[in-house]
Length: 299
Length: 339
Image 1: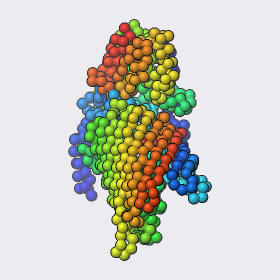
Image 2 (image 1 turned 180 degrees about the horizontal axis):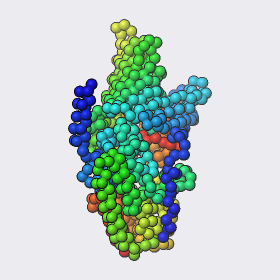
Image 3 (image 1 turned 180 degrees about the vertical axis):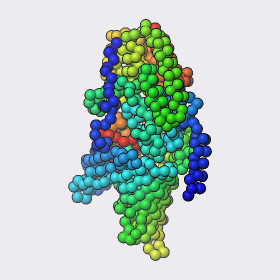
Image 4 (image 1 turned 120 degrees about the horizontal axis):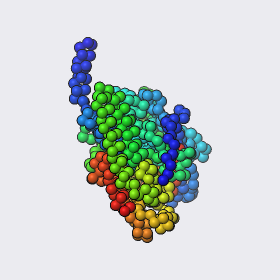
């Protein structure tokens, strides 16, 4: 017996040496990018969704389970954003270390000041999220909360490297502060600009950068644009001299094209996540891209 | 500029009670058949109530109760469609399921009918497993293979034969129903996937002897990651081979298959064409050939409307036609569907 336990100890120490890098699986690329800032060379991170994909509707392919079975840490955006696919993948993973409630499970939304929390859960309102609007990573200050949550998770599964993660967290937060000043400076001349959005996923971005979303192409979240909604939007665009419709890579532009043809309004597809377009390489690049492109059309 | 709303405290986010997630699915239908006395009908085919939650840190439980009208008596009755416990904490990539569950046969049998892209079940499937499919009570052990290049899962199920299927019966002795399934899932690239499944079933039949079945399922999917809610294509086929031992020195072999292609024309529109071929398990000279076409309009994730027409040619009777209309609607929690 003793021999076996010594042998297995030896085996485990070998395997933990080989597995030195903490394996992180995130649901989205934004979580991946922030996890890479905090984890540095101590981690290897994979994201299930791509940056140009609608995070509500990721298909739970069994192939995703392969990376989840070996993960040390699982990071989710939370707030029901991934409710249609990540719980199923997680329970199929057979990985007890990353289930909800364990140390390897990180809900990145913990502590975020949520916007648009509904007072009643009613599906007649379309795809509403009962905990609040889940697109909170589009406010760079919430990036700090996400980073804090990921650092907490990393320190739970890898306590020996706590000082390393804490140092990276400080560096990340400092960079957010510096970049936020720059972004807000660029956006300052356009404060209060009225815009139209395709889907209700920009409220955190809108609030942080002082934009004003007048209406959505979707009559209700998740309900495709209807002719009457297009008429309503066209009237609003004309009445308010609105300059731009912002959309996301995973929505078709056919209805925005109609409004654009009628009113001359510009259409702009923004990056909703890291990797949405080639130049959007990390979490900072996400705001660089969106703000630079917004400014060009608002000028 | 808007005033920043007050922060929401953490408490609102935790569920307020330990009630399970509850969902109710309605399945309303209209039907037409070209033969017989009664050609048109309307009925609430099924009301499914789902109750799902984690039991404790080690397991979760899923119950699906089905309220439906008995076709013979016309009275409503309740059936436990599925009710099982799934472990979440077994070592070595194992997962155990105990209770009543749909057997791991191919692709159609494991899916609840309301989630299928057609209204009637394939003929060959009904010939062997009945309209309700093969579901039984017992144990199911699944092992995720350590294959890195693609997904591989082996399932082994031992059940007691409560399923009232044409091919298998409950033994009066100690014989159990055994199901083995190997699932192979290949990611060709981000947009294209392929699944190949192999199933073996062995169990008692109603001649108090043994039937053995082999099945192959093959599914190709094209779903472009970027615009995955607008266009997609699925081509799925299953082939069933049955050998029923009926008397001394007499056994009957039979074959059946279906193949369908589903194409998503637009965000809400789906079109599915299916071909069925089946030999009757008790007499393989009786064959059925059927074609069907289903148009589906998916209003949201929570309701869909479908219309199916079907023509069947069997060599017993003359060709006949059928049509169905189905409206599926969900309230409450709605679990994810398998890919």
